[in-house]
Amino acid sequence: MINAERLSKIYGSHGNQVVALDKIDLQVAPGDRIALLGRSGSGKTTLINLLAGLDRPSSGLLEIAGQGLQSMSAEDLAFYRRDKIGVIFQSFQLIAQKTALQNVELPLILTGMAKSKRRKLARESLEKVGLSQRIKHRPYQLSGGEQQRVAIARAIVNGPSVLLADEPTGNLDSKTAATIEGLIVEICNESNATLVLITHDESLANRCASRICYLRDGQLFDKPGEAS
Ligand SMILES: Nc1ncnc2c1ncn2[C@@H]1O[C@H](COP(=O)(O)OP(=O)(O)OP(=O)(O)O)[C@@H](O)[C@H]1O
Ligand SMILES: [Mg+2]
Image (cartoon, rainbow, N blue to C red; front, side, top):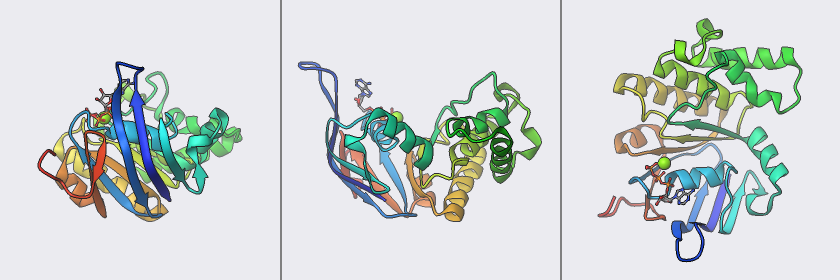
């Protein structure tokens, strides 16, 4: 499902460069759940942004769901994100003025789907995350855990084959975090989506993932090592 070979991302220009990802190799099979652990600044979000097609590699190969992302046009990358990818962020990233239902419906508007069908799918997605009773609430009327549920519903409304989660429980208390973790794993199991979960928390990684990888200074390892 995911195949990265010698994938690098270098930010900045000459004399002021940051090597955020340094020739990493990563293979993830369809339906696999991997966790990426690493210190702040180790390149975790950079990697998620590349996998999501939100940013482009500086060099190397990146194939996801049979498509080579490194050579795609901006338009094709937008289609790729729309059709294949769901992303969950630490800070939820909901639109404050919109209701839960409208937030979840948003990715479907890009597909040109009829409104009645969009609404139906958005309702079903909110039902999956247990929020049927909150569809007209705006983000400020929801608890942190509920806001993250809306964000999960939005991430899965397009039926993504890859779910990317960047510290999805980082802003939640431990009890709510456990519920959200459980929900993400359940959704991946049900839909057979491939999961890439970023976290600082090794025990969360152990609970959610079938495999753990470690990022250190932009390099990827399959063992923790002394610096992690
Ligand atoms: N847009 C950018 N321009 C320049 N440097 C960047 C940019 N984004 C990230 N970096 C640098 O790249 C490195 C990796 O950043 P990244 O955000 O991937 O880290 P992270 O592992 O997600 O950290 P955290 O756990 O704090 O979220 C850092 O040194 C950061 O300063
Ligand atoms: Mg990050």
